[in-house]
Image 1 (cartoon, helix red, strand yellow):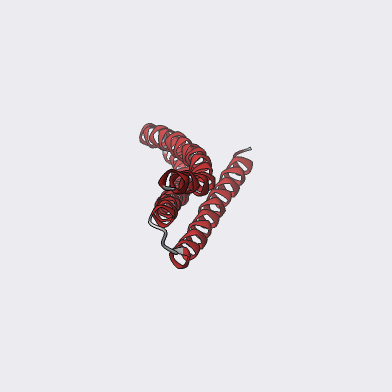
Image 2: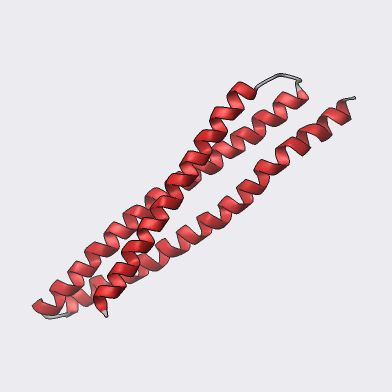
Length: 141
């Protein structure tokens, strides 16, 4: 009987684990975008230092846009990380509830909903950052 409960616990915990795997992909996208943005900001700072006043003004304006985008990406990373922590907590609670034969559904449901809300915020922040990036690109061409 205990091995059947363990198998059931693993089975119930499997779906949220797939969500964790997909969240790691989202987190990788966000951190890669942030890394590229940081590299570009460093290059812009160097160019501002080495440029004349008129060109420097345009570069500083672009640098301000980069800072806004970095803030959005950092918030998206924070919400994605919170999502992953909440999903991991859901997995742990589901596992414990099955093994210990406790009904912890009243804990699992709100945590999962909160995780999904955090995910929606993270993806919305990514969308806003992408909108700013494309707007910035259009202004430069």
